View 1 (tube, rainbow, N blue to C red):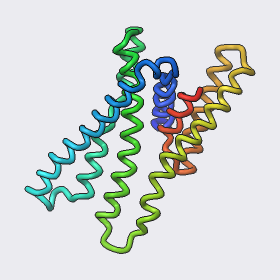
View 2 (view 1 turned 90 degrees about the vertical axis):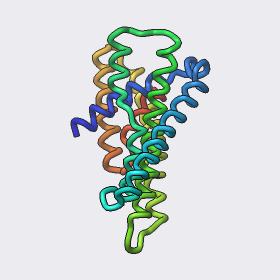
View 3 (view 1 turned 90 degrees about the horizontal axis):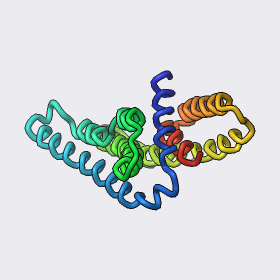
View 4 (view 1 turned 180 degrees about the vertical axis):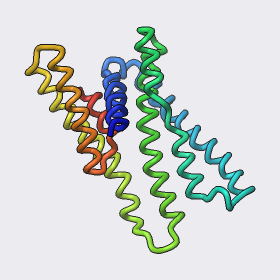
Length: 201
């Protein structure tokens, strides 16, 4: 629970870097860089692991290969965010970097959900309900984004009622915890939900 909430705060911080005026300037660049570098990482890891699979098929199965390739898209956003905050970096590189990190994480979550679904289909020996395997990641991704967006609007409305910085911080912390908790219960991606909440807020 503690690590989930900590990741929720990181995702919220990254989501809050999606400012419309900055996205208008760097949005196209950030989107292309984020998606291309994440998918190329997956492709190269999948190809390398496929060679290992051909050489040693008993050591690495095809479903494991696909899942590990999807994990390769993920980066550690906390390190990037902390370095930028520590040095108070500001400029065109930073303005492009933060949306790239956020888009990269979103692509990683989507790629992982799809890859696990494909791995389940390939690895199943018996009957597998393909429809439920496909619908599950879609619900996790789209449900997380929609739920996070709704909480972002609620958080924006709640913040207007509180004047003090401490009170506003308490409301934000409570909303992130609520977002992570309910996402876990409903089967949504808590990271995407917190990222969407931060972006809307």
